[in-house]
Length: 200
Image (cartoon, rainbow, N blue to C red; front, side):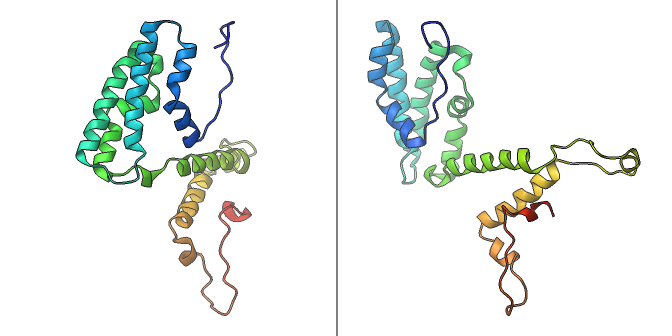
């Protein structure tokens, strides 16, 4: 916040950049937090969060003890974080950590490194681009009354669903087998997932 009470614009950081900032947050707390009591609370919260992040970021499989330590540190962090920021500090990620959702995932799959969210965020971005640039956004504009009475309708979900299915086939490595021509003498032609044929 500025002295006038206005927010500074959002800064987008990748995972490694964010980790570098959080792991060195103590220096920022010393400069930015005005009272000793608040500094102690922030330093405690960040110390507990950093301890959990070290566990989450490890590339080897978690032991049960790792996961128990992870959730204990998160619980300690969350108690202080709520004192500092009340309900406004409970973002989606904070909820997932404090509620035990992440710990449950860790118990089941034993490794978060294999399930990076960066790829999904990129996929989500592609989905938004596809919706706004390559669909009619739904609605019945341009449809005659006769066509509407006959059951014709525009559907924004159908082209997105088709695109998602095709995209997932390629991501999973199934596209090469499913979209090749049958005749081996012809040049193997695969549908371009991002090409103009998505609407077909």
